[in-house]
Amino acid sequence: MAKKEENVFQRHDKDTGSPEMQIGILSDEIATLQAHVAANAKDYDAKRSLLKKVAKRRTFLRYLKSRDLDAYTKISKKIWLKV
Image (cartoon, rainbow, N blue to C red):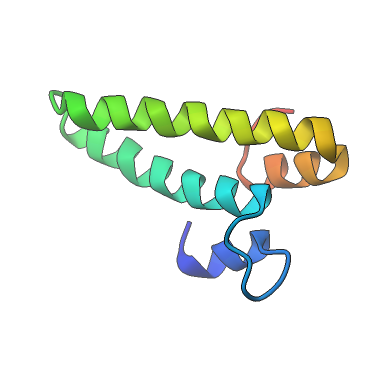
């Protein structure tokens, strides 16, 4: 996901801290790291950071699901997750 798609997750123009925005940013970083790990299978530090980012995104998704189910379903569809 490019910078343009990050705007899809923003609540307002200067939003960087909402759970939706954090999930969008983490999803971009996860996609980048997945491509890197696929090309460099023995880069264990990248694998570890990928797992950490996935866990952090999962935490944000769990929080969002408990607070706002509609926003959770919307963002899950945007980042192609199973709901």
